[in-house]
Length: 384
Image (cartoon, rainbow, N blue to C red; front, side):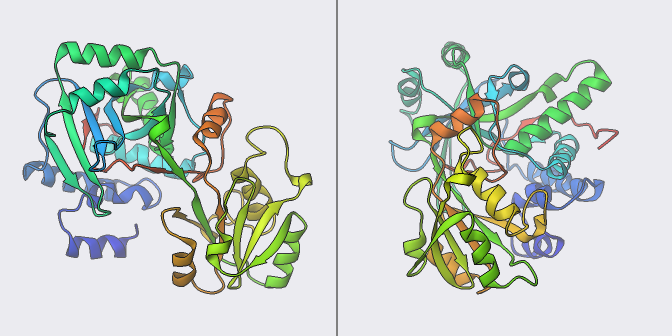
């Protein structure tokens, strides 16, 4: 979010929590935007926007009004689980964004949004959480997208021990959303440990854990600014060397129906693509659609994204239909659509210690920013 957008937001919604988290996309680390965010957070605290839990505990978190909606647990996760291989990642991160978020965490002294992770339910955990949500939620909020968020704090020692034991038995948990925040927290914890001998509470991260079978993964639509001095005909020829190209009648027909199928919009015409055999390696993660598109389309043909012109590439969540994108974008904008990565493939990538390109998955349900905060050691690292 740029300065103009932040100014417009300040005039329209002075109490929005985006005043706190909006610096995430504001560029390189700087005391000025981080200081503004800290001032906004203090203003919200002074106005009574947040209430502390009476005792240490966890929070059972439901997103959605239905009783069948996913139930998660929010609490602190030890960052040592990253080094131990128990907290497993699957996406590359942008060092500049990580540095900005590290600076934000150190300056604010809080985790403002839980990262989201998935776990394989060993059985019994969801049933126990359902019992804890039999009463009315302590907090209920509806976000701008219409999603309902219900919270049940759990501070009873016996219930906490039971939940802790169930999660402690899990072999691994998988990062779904928040790879950059996690990397920033690790850097922040290392910086605190270098100064103080131990990371203290900076060595933990606020985390929302959801059962893998209740998580929905969508794709990110990749929107690319057309390379200058390249005709649509030349680009399509380059694509056809790597993919079979089939024209289709509009965006609905271009929506990928399975893995190994991609949708492409070029000069207003929609196509369905399938990778040719010679660009499809057999090993993870390079055989997955996200890696194939990153290397053979974005990098080699369009010159967009990591290692090329990063400003030419943007991402739109898969909740936006291709028809809607087609209507809102300029005719020369290029669109790439993939079929969503299955959660089992995400876990396989993470289990192998491999990573996919940034923005490979869009996760629902989305945890709300600013609904749950956790205090951390406030310290600005000496070197960013």
